[in-house]
Amino acid sequence: MPTLSMTEYSLITNVTSIAVAAMFAGALFFFFSRSQVAFRYRPALLITALVPAIACYHYYRIYDSFVAAYVLDGGQYVASGLAFNDAYRYADWILTVPLLIVELVAVLALEKKLANSLTSRLSIAALLMIALGYPGEIATDAAARWTWWTAAMIPFAYILYALYTEFSKAVSTQKESVQRLVGRARAIILLTWSFYPIAFLAPEFGLSGGQAEAFLQIGYTIADITAKVGMGLYIYFIALEKTEADSREQGNSTPAALAAA
Ligand SMILES: *C/C=C(C)/C=C/C=C(C)/C=C/C1=C(C)CCCC1(C)C
Image (tube, rainbow, N blue to C red):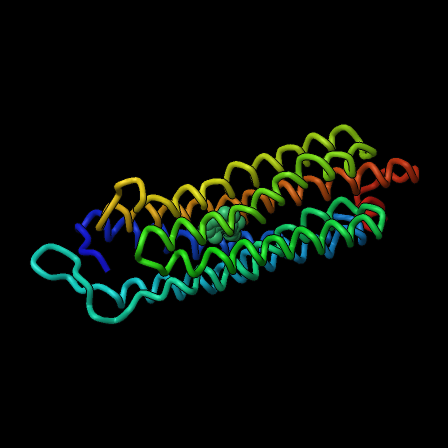
């Protein structure tokens, strides 16, 4: 573990601590908002709640593991000898990244065959992407890091490609307001998910020591909050919008009828 300045250490611990709170709040919010949407969209919101719930647990472990890995020594934070367990992050991603795909497909209530095919192909690609990234994350030599990075970029490119081609076709039959919201949810995926492979390469671009550590930990954490809670909000908006549209089609207008539709 690289030596950290007081500022680097407190930035990392504060941001990971905020992540515990944000993930907890997101999980509660999405869980209880299920009652506002029609039955067919509730499984999507349940998954949307599970993602930050899983991440809340892992951020609690990340925070603890990080604090234990350092001791204050002469105005600086130096390695305590206890290892910081980076695997919590990857354990979290391997569960939550496929679930993020599942929630996005589920909320669209697409035709079953298409939904199953999109979900299975994209979540397998997500699993592969994380599994191939991990050996690179823990490797110390540049050649190994670049090799695993390149391997993980293939399923990553496939996911983005499918989201911008097949997925567009799949949502083209939906209401315009829904298409717009789906477009924003997809933009969140493109922007936040692209941050990870870039941050991963920070050491290759000359960042080192405490600076690289702070950049990576803070960057991953902010991207995680946006990709899970920020994206979750769009899933919630899509579910609300579709509930309203479905119910208008059926001629209902009271809020109770909307939620029961
Ligand atoms: C909530 C957590 C999310 C959305 C995590 C997403 C992670 C990625 C998109 C990671 C991608 C990577 C590559 C494309 C190559 C290098 C290795 C990774 C795993 C950092």
